[in-house]
Length: 375
Image (cartoon, rainbow, N blue to C red; front, top):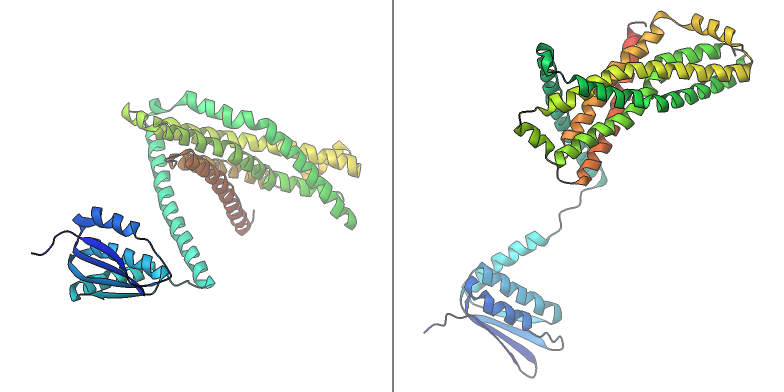
């Protein structure tokens, strides 16, 4: 009568160790066979003969255990395996799969890795762009709905955002603009003085501050200050499931959270740009007065004469666009937070980096556009 219980026996002769296995090496026998394999003592001083001929039935689970036994013995001593045809067949299949799974993938060269990274980054950028366009579409739809139904407009929250994002940022923007104005005036006087064109430092200051630096300084500061705040606030609310609670009680997060921040910042940044322009010019004028001994009256006259009609308005026109970029990206990244505080930190950082990057991109596009039309 054929045995149905799997077994493993170990014997010794003077020259070798004898390992024999028989019975059913199937999944229902693993609870008995596996401890026997684990308890097997390995002595590397003698050869090992393995006999699997008495195994009557073997499935893949039993074959995997037999391969594990072979691995243990293979490391310590030479071995000779004897098995019947059925056992040889299933073990060959398991060993073949093991070799294919354990083999290391072919290492690609540096150029292939670079191309792979570029391709992966491109696909991620396209996916992000698609999601971002959908988000902008949702904002536009809710904004138009608010225009059609003014009663849905969150006036008090918008005023709060104007205060937090606008008025509270006046001190830091004023200080930075004042110092940058000093730097521009000093460097301009230093370089133009070598050509005997000191007076044109005022022209340089006027164009640089009013057309470019005023709005850029204000936008970058707001991106780091308010853009990160938008992402962190909305991200924290999403982690705490407050956004789900809003949906449950019939409140739309777009109308409650996104639109007040977008409108508030769009109204605030042009005012902050005016303040940045003012203090930048004051700082530059002070440096021109101290270094070049140009009187305030002459400074004002030369400053006014150096301005073209569009110099001031170009900087102001950029402000609402930059404000929309900062607000939309900050809110979008906040909406993408999920799972943990690590995600919150990552998306807050991304909000600042992406905002500053797009501000520079849009500023370059504005410069190209105004250059093409001759302004």
